[in-house]
Amino acid sequence: MAKHNELGKVGENRAADFLINKQFTLLHRNWRHGKHEVDIIALDGAVLVFVEVKTRSSYRFGFPDESVTLKKEKMLVEAAEIFLEEENLDYEIRFDLVSIVKNKSQEKIYHIVDAFQG
Image 1 (spheres, rainbow, N blue to C red):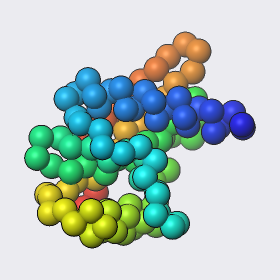
Image 2: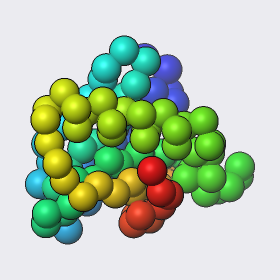
Image 3: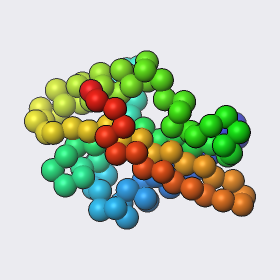
Image 4: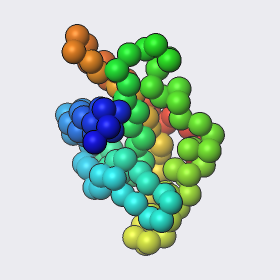
């Protein structure tokens, strides 16, 4: 596995732990439907949250969450619509980002609640 893929998996695990510690209930990790993928789907109280996790080893190219493009946001919105339809759910929904910078000397986790609108 490439180093960036390994770092991504570590980041997703840290993000899951972080959200659990914030009392989120994790429902799915790496949910997929065709070309759509959501890193984490969780409940924050009565709100269904679709979480994108971005991890980098430094700030050299900016904060990890800055790499989430409009195209990625649209894909997440489409994924949420598919998920809700498939599961026949009617929840208030939200899109969060968990941005992680992790290397040998530091680990910083930033949780951006309601990062964009669907």
